[in-house]
Length: 125
Image (cartoon, rainbow, N blue to C red; front, top):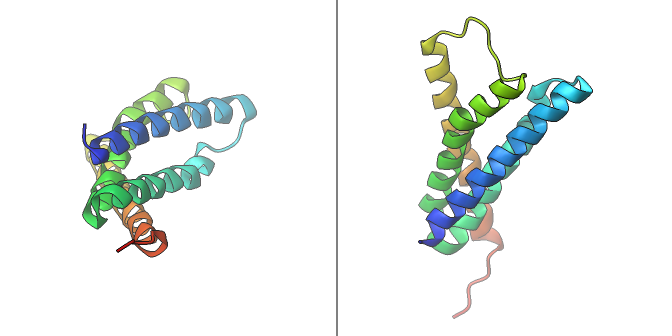
């Protein structure tokens, strides 16, 4: 398995674990599920950082987008089943728009993480 695929796999496991925990805590403690957004963004950026360190800038962008895609589909279903992800009356068009926006946000955060990897990774000659 390549570095990028491994990074996406671990990122997907991480985001699904985070979604489950955030949804459960939201239900149990009564806070808005949306407060988990910064954690998701941080995961997308971390995935981009790690992917870029091993495979370059585009791998970071793509990896952030891929993990966000998992978040916007499987993660949404998980949070929906737990409770706070349920959107009554959500049309199929709205669902598609949300998925596209989350994937774009994941690519953006993955790109920021990838740029950080480029800045903070020293290269040895």
